[in-house]
Image 1: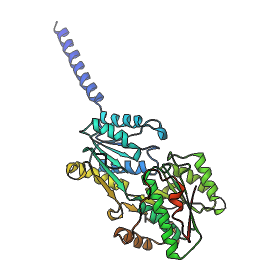
Image 2: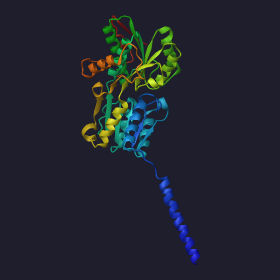
Image 3: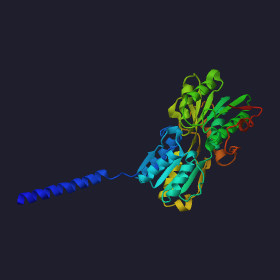
Image 4: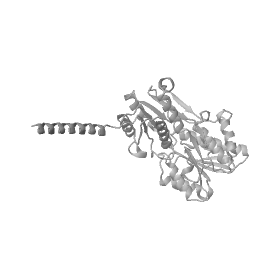
Length: 369
């Protein structure tokens, strides 16, 4: 009888220990900082990657959990796909969601409205009229200007720009418009004529690499018709890289982050402080400053905040005639407002020739394709 009672006790203890172990093992891991990516891949060497690396850096430095979520269907992701990814992040415990790209607007509005206790950072976005959403925008025209200016000052006279968004992406439009203005300013300063800048949205509507885009850029590079191409649009860079590396001298200007490590053909990159700005906003959120500094507001960042420019590290600076010292002079002139740069003159769709060819003058011809 005693043996039976002892056996019963042992069985009960084993069951309790097993249940506790199961509960511990099965406890759902939560992630309080979430990144919901834009179209394209996470590690795209550009926009998604820069945003994610900022969230990752902040989380690891401050012992916060983090996770990324890629909406289904890749470059064909719909608002429903983005909504699903955001809701999954919330189900997994997200307190704050970082979402890059203008395509996030409708999905973010829907999810933020339904989840007022969750905060949202709309990178490359605008004010959505919600107290739990803050937006970060950039003065991309400044980085584009510096890139176009640097290319012409370095001796390039045939420039190209393939811009993502098909003319409807505000950031790419600002990059491109600044790029043309910078080339024009440098041509005037050098007193050179015969400079050409070719602008195209033709195969950039999806921001993805494509055989068609690679063929277009290969044709640009052929016989030095275009010497350097501004690859402005996420994974589109891969098509430009492939085309450049098929040629002897084809060069590339990267975008968003320093893309020098992706190809030896990259001479510079028109960057914006994606990682730095994400860390800044997350820091303000965790410091309890959301209501005072962020709620229903847009932070528009540029050279004055060191959020636009060109990378100057030795491994990234691949220009021979335009020096870092000359660049610093240019940067400071933009930072202090001595040089004023126009944003895009169009609203909504800039994918028409009139916007771009109107910039042509006696020294620089702007060609729209």
